[in-house]
Image (tube, helix red, strand yellow):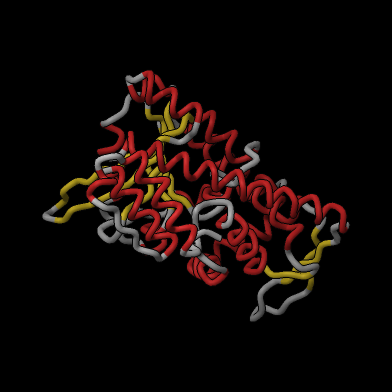
Length: 315
């Protein structure tokens, strides 16, 4: 069995684990809003905690065509130019309010994003644990699992040159996740990346072992009580090119993040409040917008970003 097969098999088994109560209802509600949904994925903080009734669940709706999914030329155009479009929803379930935000991508763009996109927006997310809530058929499910394995491969390929010569799975992923954070409007430090890895150590240990078989990385001896250690030999020039690529991603990512937030004004109810919540969540800084600026959301966003930048909210 090839290493790719091992990796895909593990990702498939992980993504079909039991789901938190309420997630399927959120997925069904999102599917009812759009035509041509071929799959729904679940990831993020609610997956880690196993609770859908605390916080905002993160979903991805994969569709066959943007125009069919939205019934709107404008929405379809926005999703093609700057994917994905992101929406908010809430439902009532047994007296509790469940909330989610969901992104929309075509299955084709999702597969490209996990393997071919320069920026880490998709492969950085879906190299992490994710659940497959719904797939139209077994062929679609197989494509998604293959894409998830591709995201892991892409993540490791880009993160490996920035790790020490000898490293553990935890060191690889905390390094890589820290790099992807700096490519978005986030202020989280290494401790946040470490908490993500520590929330699913078996997952990261297993996918690292499977993925590294495809790279020039040797497994060093380790006892049963110790984490596996690996060694790679990567030329200094390749490390420098890789670091330069991450620097470019950081600039690209922050620009794209601002544009996506501005686009959120068109897809979110109370879009400005969503943007302020997003800023506070990732920067830890609470921003207030005056009533005068609230009347002009497109002006309020850049003014808020400038204030946040001056407070050191972006790294």
